[in-house]
Amino acid sequence: MSVFRLLFNILWFVLGGFVMGLLWWLVGLLCFISIIGIPFSRSCFVIGEMAFWPFGQDAVNRRYINRYDDIGTGSLGIIGNIVWFLLFGIWLAIGHLGHALLCFISIIGIPFGIQHLKLAVLSLAPVGKTVVARGII
Image (cartoon, rainbow, N blue to C red; front, side, top):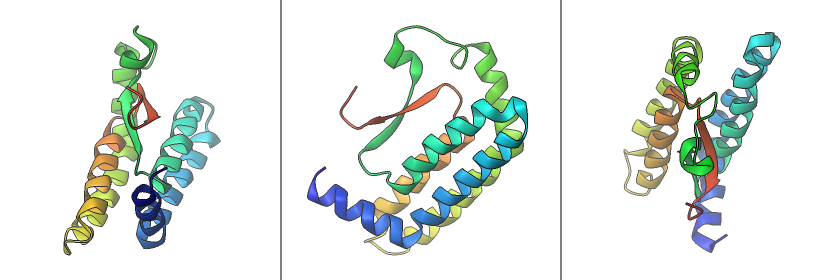
């Protein structure tokens, strides 16, 4: 991990990334309560970890990693993303957008705002995505 990536991740964690990561994990716990929400729950914990330390990570479509469609990248994934969006995605996206607006107030906060926007887009449709270290693809 580069020095800047480490520094940005530490600043991110202290200045608000901790809150959004906990919200992702809370949604993961809520999903885990119902049997049909368990696949969403696992994704929430993975994306929550990304929300804690976003610099140096990207979310990409699994189709590009696996080179084939699976249950999350096909038509069932679209249905899953619609259900996710209606139940949790919109609220997590609003949280990330609010944090992004606060970050964009200062020049120093612009990289943090960009990361919040990246996570807001991911929170709208996470089914069929996987988190990878930047530079893997």
